[in-house]
Length: 109
Image 1 (cartoon, rainbow, N blue to C red):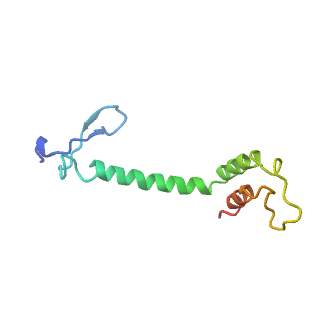
Image 2: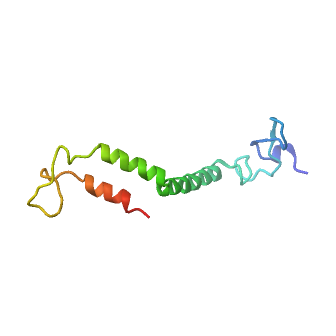
């Protein structure tokens, strides 16, 4: 049995349906926390989870449609029609990268 002062100081949920908390039963390894509850370890796990979430969100068709809708609402071609003498499709002003941004959204796997 681990002595109370050697236990992890993180408060964890009780098992079952109750709303109580108790101290983690694992042995404190670093700074009074076990390996699972140490703030550095928790931060690493949260970063990895957020990276997976962002990656999944970028592939979500609803998010891509939302980005495309925003780009269509910003369409500079209404203000800057394409130069008829230029085959590249660039705007007359030469500064609009709107078409490149739309193609980037459409061509993502």
